[in-house]
Length: 284
Image 1 (cartoon, rainbow, N blue to C red):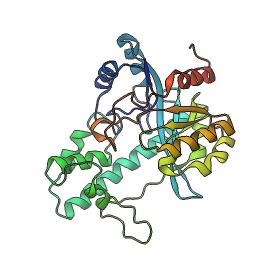
Image 2 (tube, one colour):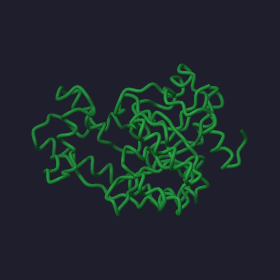
Image 3 (cartoon, rainbow, N blue to C red):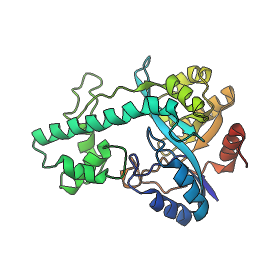
């Protein structure tokens, strides 16, 4: 049975419901699946129970949107076997969710002012089962209204450009205020979870690893769709040097994914899951 330790549903920025994800997992031979929605633990308990009934073991998780303020880089922290609704997580994640939703409203209004024929009401329909509107939902509206044919194509890069290297930001770029990654790690630990650094190759986070380890980092995501061979090798080196659990997954978002990927196709093997279970002290 395959293992996938990184997957999103429509509770955050995935396009599929949990039921659709489970059906897909069974189709793809995934027997162990971590649900890691952004900045929320909503529904994790129900998902674990539903997974048992359907024959897919669900690992309750989340992915916290954090930051490395010294290097000015985003950092994503995965938390496995966390307690749903734990106050330490809600304290840092509830403001993030609200800020993201309000930022998306500002983005939408700017696009409307620029002449794009979309509405906030249309965009909200794509996010109706989730915790707020994401940029993917805005792009979904732009696709449906004929402005582009992809989520992460040229139009996305133009509208949401961060304005780095002396270039002007895109008209829909709205900066977000994230929490320090070390704070995110401590929150995961308080919630009884296992903190893991997500896709360090994507956000160039390798230099930050020693400091994150000091704060309690327990694992590093080695296998990820946006990791090349050098990223995988470097992540393995850091895992060996600091005694970190090596994890991996598809970072599955369905239609909203950055690249087309089959659920379970990164398969980090059962050893990764067993290491997480041993760390948590749950049955193998």
